[in-house]
Image (cartoon, rainbow, N blue to C red):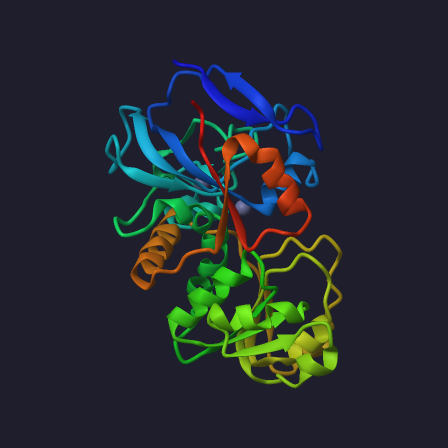
Length: 338
Ligand SMILES: [Zn+2]
Ligand SMILES: [Zn+2]
C-alpha cells in the first residue's frame, strides 16, 4: 500500500504538521477515496484539543470529505471506481445490530467515527466502509458540498426524525455553520421559518438564508413574543440559553431538538414540558440513507453552505480562523498535495 500524506496533530492544541502513514491492507468492505475537498467542522477543533477525551494522536482531523473512489475491497456493494462520494462524521458501523438493521446506522453501538481511532480527511486519501461512502448527485457542486456531509446531515435529519410537515413552523437557534444550513433546509421543506440569533449583524443574512422572521435570542422578552408559534425548535448552539423562554415558543406537542453539544447541564422545568405536552430530544448526525436523501434534496433545491476556501497546506490558518469565530459560515480545505 502506498503511504498516505496527511496533516496531523501530535498532541492536544498542537499545530497540524505534514504526516505520512502506511495504511494497512484495504478491508474487504472498505473503499479508499482520493480527497478533493474536506470541510472544517467545529468538531475537528474539539477533537484536536481533546475536548471530549476521545482523541488519539497523531490525530488526522477531517470528516466532511468529498472525493473519488480510487480503490475498493472485494465485498464493496453498489459503488464504482472513480465515483464521486462523500464521508461525514462516521466511516463505519457494525452492519448487524438492531440499529444498523433498521437503517439507523448512526445509532450503532459500535459506530466508527471518521476521526476517532481512524484517520480522517485532512489527507490525500481516506477510507470508509462502503455503506458510509455516500454517492454525490451529479448536479451537486463538489467544491461546496463537503460541509453537507456533517453539518448538513446534522440539521436535515431532525426534519425526518421528528416528522416535520411543510405546514409546520420551524425555529432555528444559532445562525452559524449548522444554523445557516438549517434555515435553507427548513425553508425548502416548505415550513415557516424563524431564526434566533444573538448577533444583530446576522439578521439580514438569516433572512437571505430563508428565515421569514428573526428573533434576538439574547432577550427573553423578544423570545417570548414568539410564544406558541413553533412545531419544532432546532438548537444548534453549544452554549446555555433561556430554555424556559425557548420552550414557550413551542405549540402544544412541539419538540425541541438539540444538535449543539452544550457541555453545561440544561436547566429545564418539568412544568414547561407538562403544559403543552412538549418534548426535548437529541439528534445525532444522520444515517447513510438520510445523508443520501439530504444530498439529493440539497442538489434539487441547490442548497449549499456558504463557504470560504483555504488550500489544505494552510490548514493551521483555517483552524485559527474557525477558532477565532470568524468562519462565514463554513471553511473548506482544497486538497493540494503535490
Ligand atoms: Zn462535524
Ligand atoms: Zn450496528
